[in-house]
Length: 218
Image (cartoon, rainbow, N blue to C red):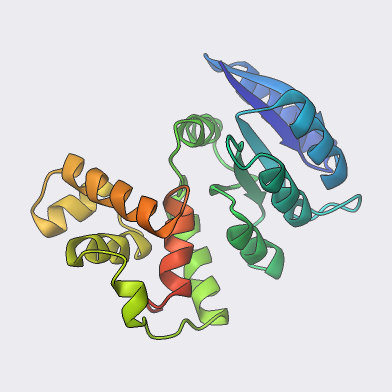
């Protein structure tokens, strides 16, 4: 059973998400709250698998809560799904750096929300490819990356670097496989080894790393 914590200052948003997620097989809403500090407390107590986190809340923003929650559980952290109206503000970019695993829009379709939660629970980020591409493009524009140094590139093989670069351009494993004429399972294996080497937890963190270290440029 996938346990979900809902964090949003809008009661109607929480109520809608609860109805959607509670109706899905294998998912239960373990708790909900309206601000960041309470989310930190509930995350410690309830140990959810996925947290649907609003970005801006009057009682305490989701950015600070994301950092605190992930710092409190370094060995087995929950997957944090940022719920955004897609303002492209500094909070969203800060959430990327803090370790958020994916994004979803507040007006997302019910089936897409369910799929996002399931994918994050399985360890997959970049759940909304269209949102992620636009966020990452703006993230890179606002924070120009340096040219990659030899030390950065030496961490990865040429193939791993190529796969990370294509991932950061918004491609799925299947799309990368078709581009490189290799099996999807081979892409996954290379990507897994690359993530271990650079110390990233999921696909979204790997994309952030690629932009921050100049492996891919906007």
